[in-house]
Image (cartoon, rainbow, N blue to C red; front, side):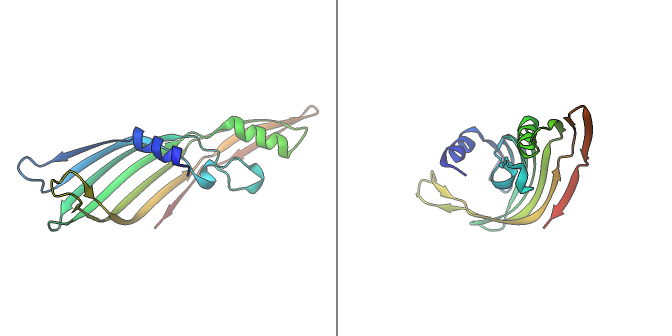
Length: 172
């Protein structure tokens, strides 16, 4: 991931925290921002078989923090990420791979739903409390749905049809 994408992500992400009225015993956070595809999800090379052709998508998350002691919180979060698949890039790649065949492809969206739990530390780096270091350690499940696609290829008056169903996988 390039530094520009990290800066863009940081600048565009919106985070809200809701705290108890008296002292912050627990909190709920809402995250909303872009979801930037990286690695194979963003790759656009049809011949590798592992390219996702995903475009920058959106993310919505909900988190809950509950203090264990003054320095550590228990945390739980769930998010929904969605990415459009770039149909035109798939067509261009397929046309390069299978020269002489004109492809027309329609693909579904990528989606992921991670559910995470763990701990979060809260360490003051300045006594005024204006700078806090917050390390997190989380483990959980993620459900990823790979898009299905439909299409056709035309060559010298013949037409072939392509179809791949959407596939969902859960990982720990």
